[in-house]
Length: 357
Image (cartoon, rainbow, N blue to C red):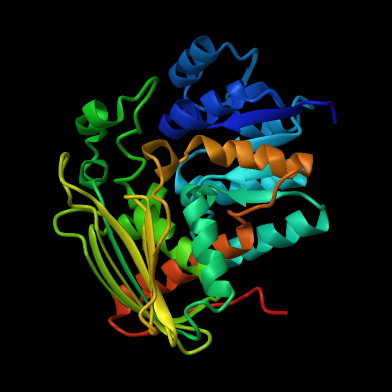
């Protein structure tokens, strides 16, 4: 491997062109050597915008090209498994956008391949790259709130237009520099695997599982699609593997200009922590009356989208840890998998754990 990590990007849609590629091209430790996308017009425009010399219509040709040491996969959810597997089988370190895969058995297979080949595998969960996430994790893991009793989550966001195949409605908000999402990416369940749970709850539950170091063992979910093909409103109750309980409520129905809520509350036998991800706030309230508030995140720190690809490169270089690890991502997939099954059967569902030794 040369001094600079040679990175290829698979998928030249919204997330790659607004966040991953700009972050990589600013990174002195990276050479962006190739991109791949099956859509000729999108690939050509991305080539012109970013000036990348090598481009491929087939990602597997990129993997076999010898031009890259690592790849970032930013494609529709249903394509992740096949692309990540092919990348790993070509001995490439891999960052995959969230949700990692749509079936936990696929995720455990990919984990096994990465471990057997000593490859780094990361999933694009942005919030873990904030100092607040690390602070909350340390406090919970070190017993500051005592024994975990309950985690309560609320994730209300503005994504309904995506589920309605009208992504252009958000152009004034997100100011897409090259492309917005394709109309089918989030609205077609054959590509997305679902709506609010796959697109948004995945963020919140991955944070919960990463902070607590636990996994969910049982889920009971209710989901409403309204007039959509995917879920818009979800209410989920679950049990952790240590017996603690959890709830997660989420809706994608907020409109531009309405304040969003992304709150997690961790309750224990000695106190509780409130983590407001979207507002960059963290506070601790102890049973002994102690109240502590962490310094707020700046607007730039709240959602450091460029930090994911930078963190991926650092992990490969051996100068950082992996706060968006694939093991926790697979546990999140298992949670979502059980939630969709529970909503369909109107009954509690045990979370599969194919990774047990």
